[in-house]
Structures are given as structure tokens and as C-alpha cells.
Length: 121
Image (tube, rainbow, N blue to C red):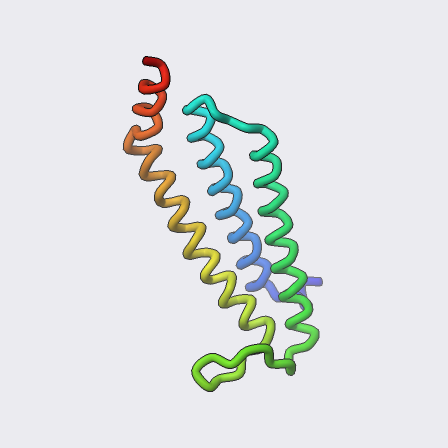
């Protein structure tokens, strides 16, 4: 399995999974602080993250098995499925990284504490 996936691809998928989990946890803790925690949404978010990573892994395997099939063309360069998936993963890193940054900034700045105080009054 490791030869088929490649160590780099496994690291990419694993680290993206960590980013997804961090995003879910930070969103959950903010809702917990605001007394709006929803266990069902939390579990759905975890399931969604696991499915996304599982699909990325499957697509990378298919891309490795069929490396000669080009699916898109970018700047007059043909891109195969594996490379296109890595490009999508890189954009996912950027999106999840930004979301985590926003949530961490709010958490560290005390924004959630202020919202709790508003709800109490």
C-alpha cells in the first residue's frame, strides 16, 4: 500500500486530516463557549472530514494507477489526476489554514469571552 500511495502522499493526506480536525475542534469550542454546542453537527463535521480525506486517498491511488491519463490542461501543460489532486489538496491547505487562523485569532483575542458576557446580560 505504501508503494502505491507514496510516503509523501500519505503525509499530505495525514496533515490535511489534522487541519480538518483542528478546524472542527476550534469551531466546536467557540460554540461551546457561546452555549451553542451541537453534538450532531460536531459528529457530522468529523465524518465529513474523514470522508474528504478518504476520497483524496482514493483519487491519489487511481491517479497513481493511471498516471498516463491527462484530465486538465493548465497554461498549455497537461495535468494528470494525481497532480491535479495534489493541487486541490494544496488549495485545501490554504483554505483550512485561513479558517484556523481566523478561529485562533478570535479565541486568543477573547472575542468568544465577550460574546459569552453578552449572552449572560
